[in-house]
Structures are given as structure tokens and as C-alpha cells.
Length: 303
Ligand code: IMP
Image (cartoon, rainbow, N blue to C red; front, side):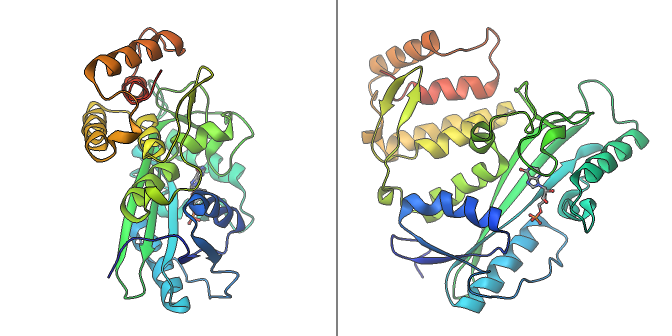
């Protein structure tokens, strides 16, 4: 069975949450896929009975794929706090109670961290996680996981975003998800990263209708279809040396697979692009791994 989704294919977005459906629709729209929501199709909403993100995402995708006899995409996400052994985890939504009170949920997390003596040093380590599951009509599924790492802050900061955003400060950033411009959050978030993996595996980049434009310092350095956005989302999420090394490998593979999307394919042009980007971009004097990764990616197109 073909495990890729081509233009014109109907895909069920396995959610009854209009916000999530809207977000996923926006992500897949450039591929010419027709998205219908589980809510529109009046499919029943399955209970999230699994104890893992993979399990719950799979369960939701499978229920829709079976109910509609169409491929289906579902996501399950949450906040994991290291000193709470990964809690609230799959119960992130439930910690907000029936009134979906995330002020209360954040206070509960803060109190639990206090009880464990976790407010030390730079703050308690935490990450958001998003698992996207695609289910096919023959019952096969594939899962794609994105994570963004950082620390918790208290009191919460900012009014943007949703859920636990105001108490989460991603590594390498100065603003919490709650303070950050939503576009910036969407570029680096756990969901964006899971989507980039799903995109690479299941969506045909050549189908993109809008091409890909990279804009930095006012210079549009590339147009035309490419995997640039996926790599950019991956670069923005890097926090460790290992992730950086994997990113460099992905960059090499992109050059092999999609050289025509690289403006600067000779070493001379690439180094020129790198020098130009580092000169023009607002890069701090002690860059972190993700800044270096973004510079390496930008060098492939920078003019
Ligand atoms: P789900 O609908 O079962 O996937 O629940 C996910 C829950 O995790 C949400 O209700 C939020 O509490 C939390 N969560 C997931 N992603 C984010 C995010 O990007 N920001 C803040 N909270 C999030």
C-alpha cells in the first residue's frame, strides 16, 4: 500500500477540537490535500484510554480511519516535567479539571515542583511533546514525535498561546511560549517538529503549491519547493550536541536529495553564503547549537 498522501486525497483530521483541526488544516493545505474533520463526519470521539502519547494518538487516528474508511491524522501532546517523573504527561489536559482551568493546572505543576524541591539552578527541566499518528485504511499506523526542551518559570509569563505556555521557557530563548510571538512558537514547537517528520515521510514536497521562500534581513534567498521549512523547524528545536550532529547529517542528505533547491552548492558559494548570513543576521556572540544549525542551513541559500 502506498504510504504517501498525494494532492486530492481526502484526509480525516481525527479531532473534535476546532483549534487543532484549524492548525492541522493550515499545515496540510499547501499540499492540496482535502481535510475533513472527525467532527464534521460525526465520528464518535474515542476515549483516550492509553498511557502513552503514541498509544493515544494511534487510537484516535485508527478510530477515524476505520469510521470514515479514509487515511486519518491525529495528534496527542502534553507537558513532561523531569522532576515529576514526566507528569503531567498524557494527563496534561486533565490536570486542568473539567473547567479546563490552565491557571489551576500551572499552579498544580508549580506546587508539585515545590514539593520535590525542584526550583533550583536555572529551573526545573521540562519539555513539550507532540505525537502525530497517521492511520491508513488497512489498519497500519505510523507515529512521528516532536519535542521542545526548556525549563519551567514561576510565576507564569505572557498571555499568548494556550495551556502551559506561560510557564515554559524553551532552551536558548528569552521569552516564554506565553510571551512569544505565536509565529515564532509555531516555527520551533513540538508540533512543528512532529509535523516536519510526518511531512518528510508522507507528503510529497513537489506537490507544495506555494513553494518555499526564505526571508532573512529582508533578503528572499530562495523560492521554489524544498524541504527547507522542515529543516528550519528542526534547526530551531536543537538543544544538544547529538541533535546538532543529526541535523548536519539531515542537511547533507537534503543536499543529495534536493540540490536544485540549494542556491549555493559549491563550497565557495556555500562559504560566501555562510559569511553573508552571519554578517547580516542578529547572531549573539556566543551562539547556541540551534543558532549554528540555522546559519548552516541559511548558507545553503543565502545570497
Ligand atoms: P491533548 O488534546 O490530549 O493532546 O492534550 C494536550 C494538552 O497538553 C493540552 O490541553 C495542553 O494542556 C497541553 N499542551 C500540549 N501542547 C501544548 C502547547 O503547545 N502549549 C501549552 N500546552 C500544551
